[in-house]
Length: 269
Image (cartoon, rainbow, N blue to C red):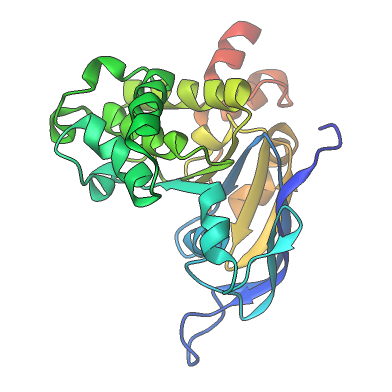
């Protein structure tokens, strides 16, 4: 990867939820490159969700610092910091508050005291960006899983955030919905220059990212480009992460990992 500006930096971060518990994160340091898709992967309990909470200021480090645009996130500035970051959860229904798709996307803008005239322009544009403008008057509950995630992303885009965090956002989708959402992520990253951070245990999804941070038991296990990390599949297997089928097949046929997605494997074959 070319030298890139980093938008988020974790510096020797340690964290625990209760004083009598073990550390959820232990001396964690890594960077999130600006304008790229970074996937943070690891098995359950590795610290992925804690990372997301620290990024948006829901929790604060016990030690170390989390920086956004080279500024440390503190109690004093975290409300301002949150305006730069939007988060989409595993179940988008937990985020819906409006009776229609339009009202739901407008909710965040209203909370930020955006004028009605500006909302009238921003909401349709955000829905158009995620190809959901034709569902403007639909009830959110009537949508498919993939469509619900698109609406949740539209709500984040309308707020003009720099960073979108996807917390296991594809885990409840069927294969077609997952494929469509991943294509949308790529398009938003390229066209809108939004930094994407996906929190996932799914290495098939992680293979689509530009950069990986692998966590294990609250520590950074590996960081790097996906094909570099997947080439060393034995290391991932040692911490209980299985390589995606496309990569295992490619390794068996070719001996190295030049193409790590299904599309890349098909084209290679």
